[in-house]
Amino acid sequence: MKNILLIGGSYGIGLSLVKKLNENFNVYTACRTNENLNSENANFIKFDALNDTIDTSLLPDELHGFVYLPGSINLRPFKGLSIEAFRDDLEINLISLIKVLKDVMPKLTNSTSSSVVLMSTVAVQRGMPFHSSVAASKGAIEGLTKSLAAEYAPKVRVNAVAPSIVDTPLANRFLNNELKVEKSAEKHPLKRIGQASDIADIIKFLLSEKSSWMTGQIIGVDGGTSTLS
Image (cartoon, rainbow, N blue to C red; front, side, top):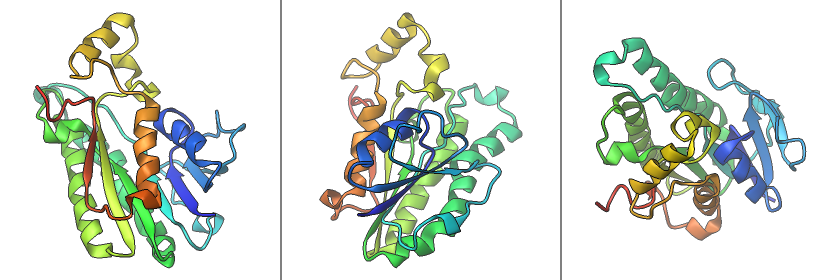
């Protein structure tokens, strides 16, 4: 059975993904808490992406999949964003990812075929006001995705998913009443906001052999927002 490491997994997209993977994969979840994971068939590793170094001795020698889920939604006018705010977004979205990936890449390359899935945002492709900080850090992830895909092919595939807003705890302040949900849904051609399962489904596909001829791709799962008016 293949071994999959998720950074994050106790809520939102991560928890939905754990539920979709745990019957067919050995799932390792590295996150701050095992809240909501007690009933799931997953190996919990206590880990804070901003502060900790992952203990690779707790992982198997071979990893067949890696997903980095921590992120931020820091929406403010550019003039109100401090340099520290940009640094904070870069730290959680990019630098912490790079640190973990450096630690676990030897285990990914031990496998004859493995898949890395990273998280971007629709705001990179489609310019949106008040998204300068998060779009800058996620844009760096898209560049990293393509560079690593080229460097590690054919052994490791690397792709990224670029969602629009998804109904998770991270987005709660933007979706915490019915009116906000309705207004957000209206901005999408498919007239609804994303659900955690929408994103988990595409990540599961990218981890599977069904996507074995895909690498270096940025995949929009955004209700049509990036390409339709």
